[in-house]
Image (cartoon, rainbow, N blue to C red; front, side, top):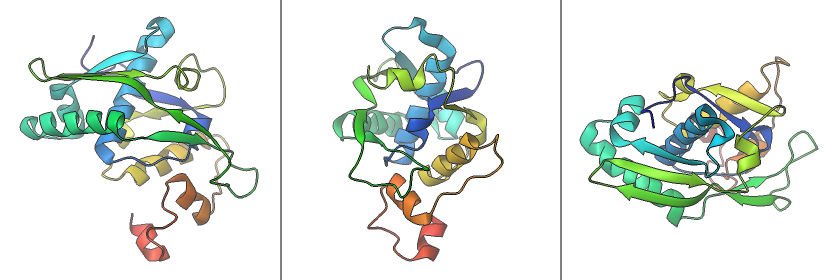
Amino acid sequence: MSELPQQGHYSQGNELITGIYSMPLDCKRVLLLGLAKVRHQGARDQNLRFQITVKAWGSLFGVDQKAAYQRLRAAAHKLMRQYNPVKVAGIGEGPIDPNDYRELVWFDECRYCARQGYVELCFSDKIRPHITDLRSDFTLVDLNAVRGMTSVHSIRIYELLRQYRNTGWCSISVSDLRVLFQLEDRYTEYHDFKRK
């Protein structure tokens, strides 16, 4: 399996772009690279299994090799051990109700191989229709455009804006952003929220 996808893009169904979820930055980076690899592989890999080497991950996200080992392993561990579901709710149908959703888990399996320096993850079957063989209602994002971002929220806002690139405008209330990012109880002052 190649180190990095030849075409550095990833895609997600728009339900995932507007999904309600939160995860640490390193977990999001693992997710993005996995999405890019799955997009490059196409639907031919029925397991939706992919590998990320420490070298590739560190190089792509500007993390030194020694720290990359620890951070990649910790991110993969968090993705599997912590419950990181995406709650699929509708945007544009009135205010987002955080109590009305479908819950999907991103991954079924994770393997960390310290000696070989890689993690291997497998996307869940329920996520499959939202990340493979997408023909409509999806968003394509250039991995290079987000790889230098240092906040999960910056990446998510960029993805939301990319979703609406063809219309030229996007209108989402701050209260809906708080719900999407699971920040209802944090950064209650607007200036604090804006900084994040």
